[in-house]
Amino acid sequence: MLSPKMLKKSFAKVEKDNWMLRSFLKGQDEDEVDRIVNGLHRELFAGYDCVACSNCCKVIAAKVEDDEIGAIAKKLGLTDEEFKDK
Image (cartoon, rainbow, N blue to C red; front, top):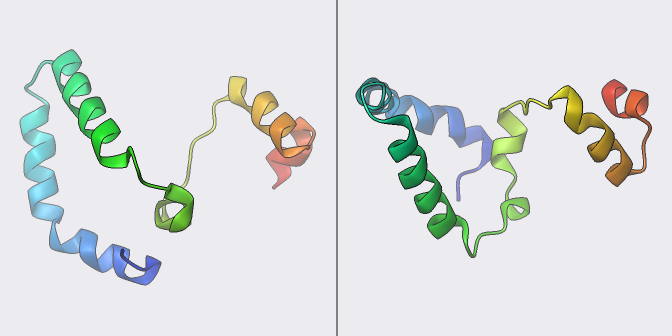
């Protein structure tokens, strides 16, 4: 497993390949790509505990939609405003 310090360096090594893949995917059927990616995601993460490393959460900002704030805040025992402040 990569340490958070190694993520940027590792991403830089595959940047060209990632660009080529993104370019290729733009010409594909979106529904088919979603089906394949979701299947691979389920397979790869079936026995994986994301909390064990949390590297993604340390370097990638999550986007929270307005309609999700209430549910997340409630689960954390916060008001909507407290959640937004944090």
